[in-house]
Image (cartoon, rainbow, N blue to C red; front, side, top):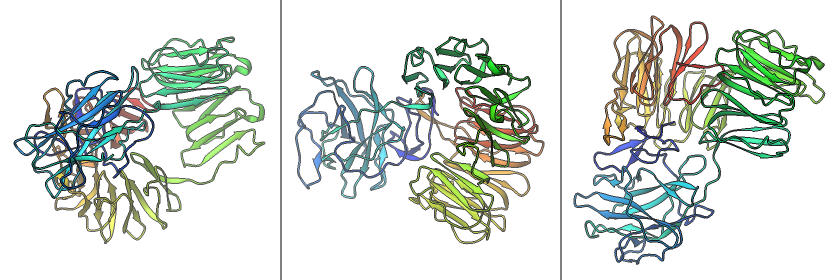
Length: 624
């Protein structure tokens, strides 16, 4: 996630820019201005997004007009509505088109034009291809804000077509809404602002990043790091304090939250001390019926509240996760074993002797995820809650909105956004790679099959035999059996133009690609200067394709940085390392994976270390 200010990452879609054509990645929902962009949106023609809100008028100067779809037809400014926002457009002498926003309060006058950070449609823009402005925030009332942006494209007849998009509660941009009057004539007076038809904005629903449900109340963690609770409030369990949190857990009649400063605050029923959190710093919290437990930063567990059956007497040792239930609790030790304590009716605290990667304690039973991807449950099984599915996986690949797993039998199952990307084909596979909106997999016969979004050919795999495949944002790459790399899909910035030579690994990212050569050196290609500085308002050089010297055993390409695992076991990263991807920590590692704005690596002791801009790490993972 991008931060609120400073440099904003650039990624994939054309943007309206005052200089050369650039492309931008899906931006953080909190960015308010600057060179930020979005996903390609669908082609919509409706007048309303749905719901209520401020009207959008593609408008500005009285008398100046946009034209409608009919040839030669022109219309005057639409009648304004209460709480309006409108967009202005004008032709410039150098052939570009400029866009701006205006806002008017109910019963008030139009305010000054607000100019997005990137607001120009280039004179050389490809015919028919949509471009987008940077977003601006529109305030619908005293507390409600929405982000909007303009999409525009040049038509073959010289006109410029404009549309509107609004960011939804899932942070995705809506389909393009086409006003009835939306065309700018190629003969329009240079420098004169033009006007068009109104559209309505949707009042957004509340946005949350996590939710927890207890017996009679629930709580959600908002995107702004505040907590909202609802339901039974007999003991004040829904009266969350006004602070910033990174996690929340609802107990029976109390609630606990992990603050962004790593301390724990609880509220609600405190009859037996279950809401009296101890001091210190924690990485996780779990609230149960009459007791609570927290995982400290030193990996030990502390519990408080009702101690019947010794439920708050956590064992010693180091843990990576904790789960508290009504009368017992369980913790996952760093070695992968599970320890449970408290009421042992139905043997709910008698964990089997195996290695696990996760644990969840229920009312009278407990389940754990084994390291072999199978599930084991113990305790009360009166209703079959202890009979898990026997399905297991050998590998998993998680993308932006969907995930795919390679079953041990070689078949693939995908889940998440089912916009064709989760419709895995039948057959037996060796590996799977989930990209942005498409997925590619290597079959046992060494051919590659891709499915999902194929807008730019990224899912149209070439024929032939391969040894590896990597699905990126809008392109994919595979290593053929002769060691050469073939890429397909969008070749903007040369990201799909692989160099000659023989390779053993390949990693396709947003706008660049990296490969590991057979001699242990790394080669990267594609974009090499993809960051935008809000303060200097310029694209800055980051060098994610400038590979370091030396020999490596693995390579991974992130959004604007890359990392390699050296033969010595150390990790070296290059590219944008200033704010979003600090230098890799010291130590020896066995694997490394670069994400958009963070990187994680597995140390030789099997622990994981991550670095990058996260508010707080998940349980069991330590951030450098």
